[in-house]
Length: 370
Ligand code: GDP
Ligand code: MG
Image (cartoon, rainbow, N blue to C red):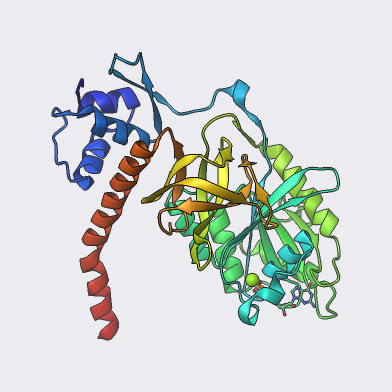
């Protein structure tokens, strides 16, 4: 097979040569920029950097890379992905529960969110909204740090009887850092002690100006318990989503992000994946983080088996070789050999990261003991 230098490959991908060299080093292939790498290695790098490989013909092994961006005409509207954040006990889970019309809180040990759940809620008009219930703000920033920036809109829940608290401020800061539009849901308005105006005023201190205070951030007084103004909250999310003009190409091999994963006693490794583009189907061969597999079954958020899942749809996947981590990327590939290859590469990168981060954690362990 034809070979290519690292520098030339970087050039074709419009990536920095140094980044490719670094990635190759992690793969256990130390090279200099002018060194030649074989085609298999090049192909791995190309897909790792999010590009496509276009073979000129079956016999012509020249690698032609193109930035993997969907053409405008392939794009179709997709549902917004909403993350609910806020201080503990301000009613994130209750609100989500009220929005999906089922009882999540009851199933939670001690009423504390155990994991990231992802649910798609269908409105009366047929439009849909996907909600992520995060266990904490670390998860949100960790996902973002790993390039798994799945959220389109953040709903910040503030209990009207408790006001702005440390995790509310954190949520505001994370939302701003992520450059996401926010909607403030002032919750527990059924409680006599709740004061929404006080919350609006207090938000000014953190540079959040809601519409009533002359700003542009939408806010809504709600109650998860008495189901007050849930329609209004949905409308505000839809309005915000319209402004964002969210689209994706559903007609391509699927790509998604793991929002949670676990080993299920009966079913084996199970991952909840949010599809970002393309359509995931049963029988698809995929790589997810360092694992790979073939989709044995797809289960939607209502526990129903489905045949395919398009953009913004959260779906449970069965048929994975092991348990991936939250924020791992899922990519559908053309065959099993390729899946194993990419998975092995990713596993080596993870191994490398673990090795290099060991001294730092030992050091922090010692300083914690001091
Ligand atoms: P989270 O930690 O933000 O997910 O908060 P939860 O949804 O677990 O709610 C914490 C507590 O507040 C629970 O006891 C809920 O029943 C209660 N709660 C949540 N929303 C409301 C509300 O709108 N009104 C009242 N009165 N209580 C609420
Ligand atoms: Mg919760």
